Amino acid sequence: MTARLLAAYRRSTYEAAGATIRIGRRSPAVDALLARLGARRGGFIGAWNPFSRRMPAGWNARMQDRLRQATRRLPSAEGQGGHGSWREAHLLIAADPRRLAVFARRFRQAAIVIVARGQPARLRPLAASGHR
Image (cartoon, rainbow, N blue to C red):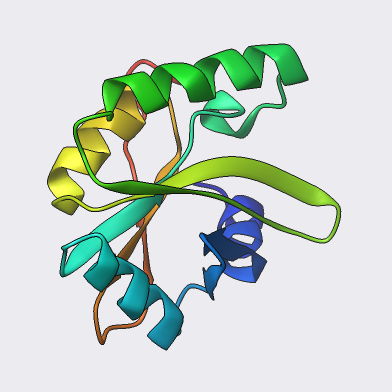
């Protein structure tokens, strides 16, 4: 992950069902949302812009629908994240971060944002197998 991309993740705000958080910070609202989802931890994951390369809106919407389908058995909340004018849809999914990383790799994401009740949000970069 480039320093520029890492900085963009760190500047971004991540939101789901009205609860917001930033990397390195705690959020009582995200803690409460995780509790409502019946979980102690989870993560923000999306399917837009694989490997952080901008894709057309229609393509992003189709991929996000496929992510929803793939994770339909897991408790989740719709959301979005970004900084300034950059916005992307994502889900806060209540599941083990290792399981979330599998979904993120399938949808060619560069990283996921891991949250746990009472803990600061953490960025987990993912190795992009086959990506240059």
